[in-house]
Amino acid sequence: MYSSRAIRTPLRNRKIGAVIPEPADQAGHRKPRGSRGGRPPAFHEVDYRGRNVIDRYFNQLKHWRGIATRIDKLANIYRAAIVLHAVITWTTTSSDMT
Image (cartoon, rainbow, N blue to C red; front, side):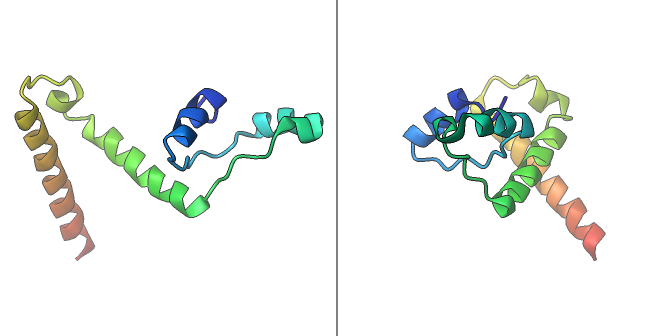
């Protein structure tokens, strides 16, 4: 899904490097086509690990009902809730490390 041409092409047009691994089934479909199958997409494993951290944080952020449902209509109040969540997460994570 994330590795489709429809996702990669707009990213490439905007000069954004995609950090999306190629699924095994897509690689399998590309291989029998030989040179007509195109080259495999670039994948940087270290960058992908960083993407995983961001994905997990957004998942955690969505557990706050007000943020997940966008109850606040004003952008600055919504942003303040996100900043508050980030500070709480950072302080609880920092205290766990010491």
